[in-house]
Image (cartoon, rainbow, N blue to C red; front, side, top):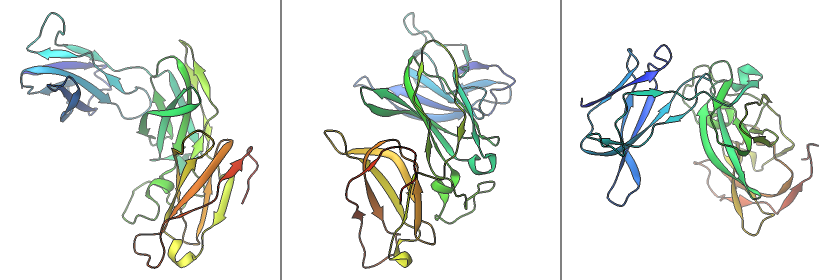
Length: 272
């Protein structure tokens, strides 16, 4: 290797996955390689001459996704090659409950711009249902998707994941970060919208995607859920106007993707 940097704290950094990106001729960063912090707490790689940045993806909740400063190989005065990189401490932390249903699910943080939310980053919940993010000042919400929604109905073996959980994707209240830290604990919801998709024999194992329809344009959302073996679904949606797209399971015949008419969620009271 021709590049090495110590990733601190060295007691916690070993095993951290690292995305290596390189600046291409048009000036944008593109994927170059993956690496891992070694047992000594160092990231080592062979990097051809060029301009790079590193993104660290720590596991657990003690440290957050961390992006290095841009640097040159070989080093330059404007873009010096780092010798030490510190993992970022999260300013948004929380625990998702119930723990058994949260483990190995996904947690995402979304930033509000005008009236729309946009994805910032996502990570897997750790074995304790905990998470952590480092974000700039702004208004955000946290969206948690249980493992049962991600993996349920897909077959295979997912050790430690509760695939028969009754809980669905759950969204926190919005909150504002202003040079401070927030603790956003989230209790998973069984949903404020539920129903049954028929014909059950063809809908079971399919999935539902939520579209938001109260803006000037149809908006794709991060809300989706699987259809159970009984043809049932549940969703937790913020107040607003929506439409559902229903996708039958892959091997279903004689049916196609179907859309509902638009409907309104006015609060947290469940509707069917």
